[in-house]
Image (cartoon, rainbow, N blue to C red; front, side, top):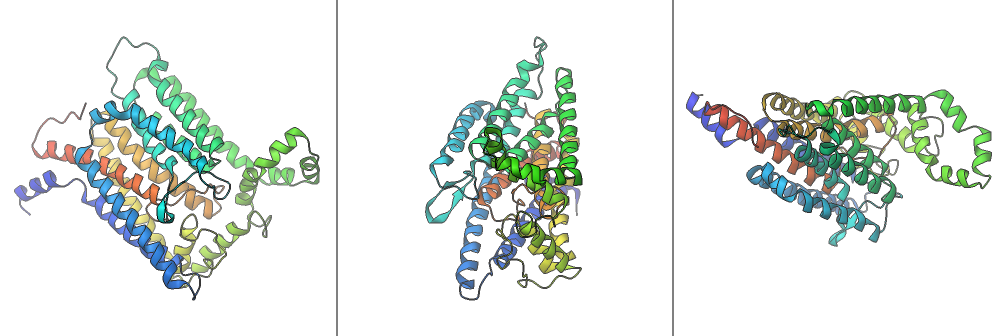
Length: 417
C-alpha cells in the first residue's frame, strides 16, 4: 500500500479496529440473544423473531448515534449544552417512578411496542462529559481552591447516584456510575486535585477490602445465624430497615459461597455456574443450552455470558474477550497519544464504561464478586446501554480521527480546546 493511500485512509477513517470489533460484537450478540430466547417449542419462532427485531432496532439506533457523534461532536457543544442535558437527564431519572418497576427497581421508562429506555445509562456518559467540562485543561491560575473546580462533578455524582440507588432502587447502575466517575476523576493532573484524588484512591481500596470481608466465611456465619434471624423477626425499627436491604448482603454471601442457599438466594448463581461448567472446552452447541430453560431469569440479558460459555465453550469466551480487548487496547493507545486532558478522560472514560460493566457482569455470574444486575454491554439485551455505548464510541472515533488527520498532515497536534 502506497504512502498516499495510507494517508488518505487516515483522513477518511478513525480506528477500523474499534469499528470492526463493535460490528462483530453486535452481530454475535444478535445470534446469542436469539439462541437465549429459544425457551419452548410452542413459542420459539415468535420469541426469537421478537427478540431479534428489537435488538436490530436498537443496533440501528445505536449506529445512528455512533455516526452522528462521529461527525458533529466537539467540546464546544459540550460546554454549550451540558447544563440543559443535565436537567433533561434528571427529569428522565425522576420520571421512571411513573412506570411499573421490575425486579424491585424502577429504572425504566416504558415506550410503545413493549420497548423501554433506562435513563441511568445516559447518566454514565453524562458524568464523563461533566468531568471533561469542569475539571480538564484548566489554565486559570487565579483559581486556588480545588472545590471551585470539582464541585460540579462531585455534586453530579452524588445526586445521580442517590436518585439511581435510593429513588430507583438500582444499586448496580449506581455503583457502575460511581466507578466510572471515580476512574475519570483520577485522570486530570492539576495539582489542586491531588488531595482529592488521594482520598478517592483510599476510598476505592476501602470498598475492595469491605467487599472481600463481606464475602468471607465469618460474615456468612454471622449474618445467617439464629440470633440475626430472631432479631429480623423482632419487628423493631432498625430490624425492619435492615430486613429491606438484607438481600444486598446476601449477594455477598452467595458470591463467597454459592451453595449456602441453593434453593433460595443462591439458586440462579448456582445455575449460572453449572452452565459455565457444562460448557467445558467445546460447548454443547449453539442453541443447546439447558440453563436458559427457566433456570436463569434473564438468559438474554444479565445471564447471557453463562449461556454463551455453555453453548460455545472456549470459542464463546474468545468471541467476547478478544473484541473487547481490541477496543480496550485501541482506546488506551490513543489516550496515551492525545494531548488534552478532555480527550484522555473521554477515551479512558469510555474504556472504563465498557470494562466496569464487563467486570461487574462476568464477575457476578461467575461468583468472583457479588451480583449487581448490570448488562454485558454490546452483548446482552438492553437497548439503552447499546445506544449509549455506541454513541460514546462514536465520540471516541471523532477524537481519534482528528488526531490521525493532524498526524497524517504532519501538523503539530495540540488537541481541541
